[in-house]
Structures are given as structure tokens and as C-alpha cells.
Length: 348
Image (cartoon, rainbow, N blue to C red; front, side, top):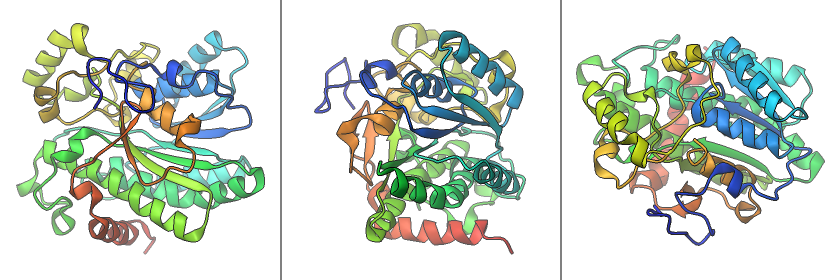
């Protein structure tokens, strides 16, 4: 990670903002789906994409909050093309409904930004009786990607423009359970640890992108898949860890990446609409926690920048290629996760 503002090979650093990394890029003619777009990083990502001419579909659980964000973006950018659609990633039927409705609109799809997530929740089960963090952060996005992939392939083929799939992971992927992914114990409440479960879901984001990248390359499709750490962001993700939340709030004004407050208070109170940050452990171990104009920078860089053309199966941080953990590079683990995810998402 490029700390203290030191620029990496890309020319950008932890201090770079989303607008800076997207400067001069023309996104007209591109269509993007951004999950978790009603708050934090998702909101800033949507705003910057729209600022550069991208047609943005905000996929949100709280539609009212999403509409409020859309109105705010349109006030700043009257020519912005922004739409809001309902998507609850903790519910596989909701994911299928969203994908079906999206395809029925006949829209192209160039960019899929899997941003939404929950963090360090108490043990909870999703709509489909799967541990909530794994279900929301990984499984919902896994199914969404598979259901929209044919649309992305058609768009890439017809437009001649590279499609990009972006999984927002976290440095928290370095703190999963010892096995990495607990395939046989996903729903084991007795062994549940909220931080390790978060790390497991973020590791799954990286493994998913890597395995998908390999499959797309083998198929010869002009679509890339990458994952990234957006920076630890000062949001309310730590509400279940009051001590750490207090530390973050205390030091945030000095060292945290700053997220524009354009979302409604109702969306901020909804833990199903969290954007991503790294695991609790990271807050105590990294040098700085970043502030959303900066927090959305790496997402916008990987989604839009010409430097990333043709780059696939990589992990990014601070708008530069970075190294994930050894488990994050485990191809066999990624293949096993893919098969496991298929078994959980295929209709019986």
C-alpha cells in the first residue's frame, strides 16, 4: 500500500481521489451496475462514473435512499444518466429478480462493480439460511455476476469495448478463519467469529475474481475481472464493536479517508447497505485509514482507467497493483469456492 502520499507505478497513491484517477476519461457509451450505491464508496463511485458520462444503474436494497442519492447527483450533474433498481444481495430470489428485470430492459452492460457488503455482524442467517456476511458479500455477487455475464459478453462483442468486473474486497481478507473458507462450517454458529467471517467473505471476493478471470481468458472473452482494497473507510461499519468504533471516530478527522455525505440518514442506518472497509484488526495494524473521495479512487481506477486495459485476475490497493495473501492466490481454493458457490446458488 502506498502510504504517506507516495505515488506507485500507476502515478497514483493513497491520497488520490476518485475524480483524480478518472480525470480526462470519457465514459460516454458505457453502462455500469454499482451495488450498494446508496451510501459511502458506492455513492461516490456512482457520482464519479456519472460525472464522466457513464450510465449508472444504482443497485440498492433501500430504494428511497437510492432515489435521494440520485437526486443529489442530478443536482450536481444535470446531464447525468442515473437509474435506481432494487437489489437485496442477502436474498438470492432478489438477485434473480434484479437480473431478470435488468435483462428485460435491453440495456448493455460494460461495468459490473460488486461493491455492497456487510461487516462483522453478529451471527445471522440470510434469506436463504446462509451466514449473512458470506451470503451478502460473496454469494449474492457471485450469482449476480453469473446472471449478468451473458449480457456483458454480448455488450463487449457488439461494442468492441472491454467489459470490466470489479469486486470490492478488503485487506480484511488477510484475517479469515485458518482454513480460509470454511466450506463445511459456513453456518456453524458455535464456531462463528464476526471478524474472521468478514475476512472469509472478503477472501472469497478475491478468489471469485481470480477464478472468473481465468475462465474468461480461457473463453477468449474481452472481459476482465479484478478485486481491490478500497482503503479503510470511516463509516458506521463498526457499530457492533464500540471500542474500535470509538478509536476510529477519535482519529478519523486526522487520518481517515473522507466520504462525501450525500446519502440519507436512513441509508446510513441500514447495515445491509454498507460499503466496504477492511476488518477490525486492520484498523489497529495499518498506518492510516483512508477518507470516500479517496475511498472510491481505486474502484474508479480499476473500472475506468486505460492503464488497466487487459489486466485481469489482479488485486489492487491505492490505485496500484498489490499483493493479496497467499490464500488469495490459491488457485485450487478458488476453484473449490467456485464449485461450492454454484452448489449454493443453483435452483433445486
